[in-house]
Amino acid sequence: MVNATRKTRKPLDMDLLEPSDHRVVQPQRVGVSAKGMVSTQHYLATEAGAEMLNSGGNAVDAAVAAAFALGVVEPAASGLGGQTMMLIHLAESGRKFCLDGGTRAPHRTPPGELERAEQLRGHKATTVPSTPAVLAWALQHYGTKSLEEILQPAIRYAEEGYRISPLQHYLTKRELVHLRAHSGAHLFLKNGRTTYPIGSVFRQPALAGTLRRLAEVGIEDFYQGEIARQIHDDMVTNDGFVRDDDLAQIPWPVERRPLATHFSNQRVFTFGPPGAGRTLIEALNLLDQFPQSQRDPETLQGALLLAHVIRKANLDRSDRPDDPTLFAQELELGEDITHLDYAKRVAKRIQSRIKTHGDTSHISVMDAQGNAVGLTQSIERVYGSFSASPELGFLYNNYMSAFEYQDISHPYYLRPNAVPWASVAPSLVFRGNKPWLTIGSPGSERIVSAILQVLLRLERGASPFDAVEAPRMHCSIEGKVSLEGTRMRDDIPSLLRSRGFDISVRDPYSFYLGCVQLVLHEDGEFIGVADPRRDGSAKGP
Image 1: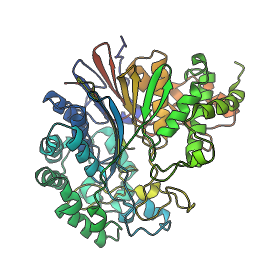
Image 2 (image 1 turned 120 degrees about the vertical axis):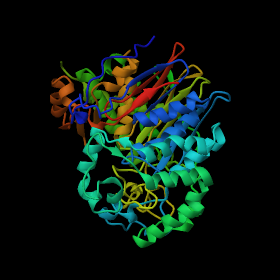
Image 3 (image 1 turned 60 degrees about the vertical axis):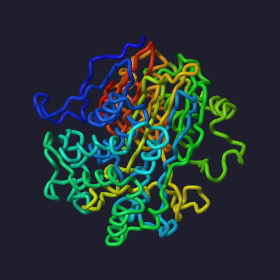
Image 4 (image 1 turned 90 degrees about the horizontal axis):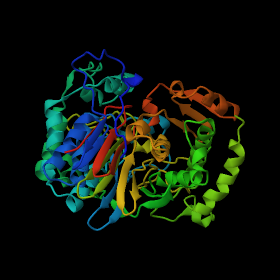
């Protein structure tokens, strides 16, 4: 039996108030249940998902309810204006599939021509939102409850409000200049100018109205009805590119086969392009070429190996982009980065280098029937485009920043109706023919490295909470290693620096290094863990 619990340490990023302040909620990071489990980045979204399981819903119902709720209580990370990707396992049929809910550039997009500021902020930074369509599709085809019932927790949180956490206060303060300069200010700043105090109740009546209309009329209204008209008018007024004809082509998700590999006697399924599952598959294949004793991230050799593997996997993803609707470029080059033969060749090169002398939101759900869901959604960067319609109450994404702007032959080059790069990698791990683990994280290019380190620690027998809470690192394509240095042995940064890596020491429990949510099923129990790096919780029915 896995040891599920351990004393929870307080993340430095959250240490902005005295713990005695009664307004500050301390989420339950570890949950145990015999009837299913929900783990999300915000405790109220977890409550929404658990509410669905308690009332007889399945894992898809719980994931969709939690996703809509996250758009309310974690608005800087996700919402109706963003995109959603899902990985689903259906126990009855044994089917595993991805719902590719990639957003797309509007018809009027000028190919490759946006200035950097326009890619990042303002109405021009926005692509066609896919989150409402993806969540509705999943619910209609694989859930058991009505949209009206699923939306009730989200509507309640928007109407009644929730308390601002230290982390939300910090992020808002960090982005205050950009918020003040754009239309999101009137929705997310007090009097349009200042941050809401920690512990204060934040209500969103405009968003509540939008959600209520969706519950009454249906998701199609977002794309072809009154809500679509309001988005169109807001975009016209503010020089955005999205129009009613973009929205009218509802971005229903595409069902795709997941990528798969074996790792440590387990079968791992993850999200393919435009997501970053290829990167995770390559990293796992590379690590599997080394003895388990050499891939312990707590040791000098293990940390050095991990830095090389993360860097190489991300570099290959960048050099060999793949669009599932076109063709596999890496196959043309004879370089399938997910193939074991490729991993064996690369591992030999890495072996010679390691010899040594000495945000986005993620939801994980499982239910008692054996269904499992990993869901990752985002409005791209923190606070997305910083822009919103005051009548509708949600932020528009800034996925225009996620396109390629230089190489016109690139599959993710900015052109009308193109889809952007995505870094999501919701994953399922099977033992035999049963799902053992569902896992995922936000964090852009740090998503894969965060998941990878949790899997490595679980492999070595760490408890689920220990595996998630443990100090984390990431290596960029350029060789910059970001790590929670004060929580690691002090000779690890020194070794990495001596081997040519640049070192960036991050705060303990760094917001930058991802936020893993996992649910694990073993010995008749579901164990959920919410990463202490954010406001999440885990709970079962």
